[in-house]
Length: 165
Image (tube, rainbow, N blue to C red; front, side, top):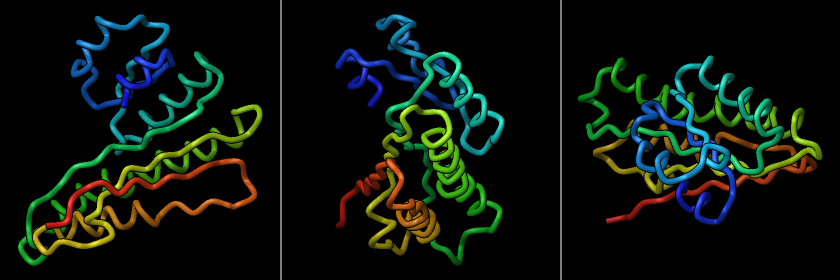
């Protein structure tokens, strides 16, 4: 997504746990077009800092592409709560924290109000798969978890990617 945004001549703030993973893009695009920030969605301070950076450096955000996630290939009965909770912290709580901060930013910072929130989920959140029960549940929450007041100028898109076998 970041490369597509940049190739279209737009500005991207790319957020990820390991910014060095984008060293190839950093070398290719100018720093006024590509802003790379460390952000772990389970760290509320990282989330706050990223949105503060966007406000201070750019003044607004047009689109948030909320794509953080991890998977867990395991049956529910064979998975400890600790392992499942770590995945929920990323796939559900992290996604919801990004979504909440996005909505706040679109309402309070963007002038005029508004923006687009694109939440990437999974087909497994709609059509659960037995071998990834907790993953399916965490993605279902992301698919249905954000409901916006229809009178606000915020567009929500839920993208459920995947393939059913």
